[in-house]
Length: 405
Image 1 (cartoon, helix red, strand yellow):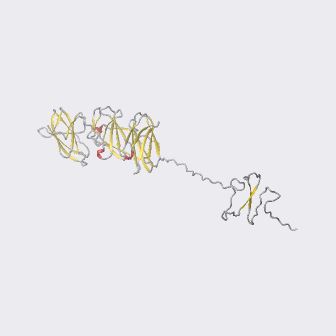
Image 2 (cartoon, rainbow, N blue to C red):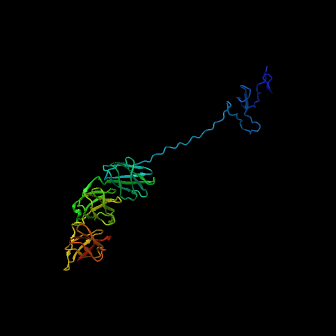
Image 3 (tube, rainbow, N blue to C red):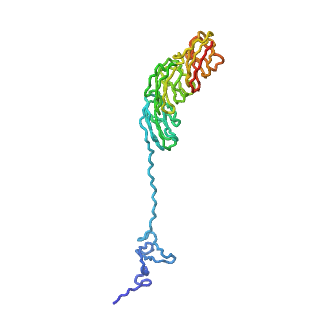
């Protein structure tokens, strides 16, 4: 006997509370879900069809409400934040312990890197001579000196490549930090320091250096070097002429004389180079090259007071005139001495080869110069010193001098 399935249309008489099955189109599927939103019906099921419903475009699937079992809405995916790598600290290639009297070289300083050097002074209130030479054009450096406790002693200005000085505080360890001034670019430099109170070395100056006839004591400053120290003694009150080194000869060399209290007495720049030792010695002479170039130097400190090594003027005629000749080297002074039997007026004449001159008594006291009106007045009998000078003439010249009563 063939059994034929029956299709129910409308509510079933046997189960009045059940939902009415819906005919399923062939080739479609149906999902059965728990309807938790049907009031008064526990455990009731609802069948939904994927077939198009009125008002729904063809090919669109109807979705069950959120919270129903079986079909769940896709959760919104949150985009994770971008994780940036930690910045790399600026890399320093140079630094370390720095000794007085040595030259340290750094081949590369880059960007915001900070090179830290350390040095120690054993004297309170020391003065630090420093020489920082920039070796790359267009990248200026900044240099700061700090005490180990953190307070700033000074800033050094190396971008002009001039030797600088820094007054320190108490004895102890200091840091010297080098950076690029703008925080960018690539540079290179050399660095050298020296102590005024406790220099690394201090050579003894020969007594011959105070004679006008002495040609000088020579030596060489290495490239990038802080100043070199020499020591000497002379009677307090002596007047010296810093014949060499000085800036006027365009070598970039200069000299600085320091007394026993470690205070500066004189410095040879572009002005006059007379130096009176009016405080007690012993004295120190620091020779420096202002832009850090390797330079040969020559030390000459002839004495104006109680001058030695000078050519004496000789009687030239029956009227009592005194005469002499000499040769003026570029940017140098010559020296002549003469004696007067009494004070009074004298007329000093030099030919054009000697542009200027100065006259001193034997103690180094200034008497007059070429600007004096008509004559000079000698205060008393005694020995006098005459110093002709060629000014800024860079050619050696012969000259003649006459002193008339």
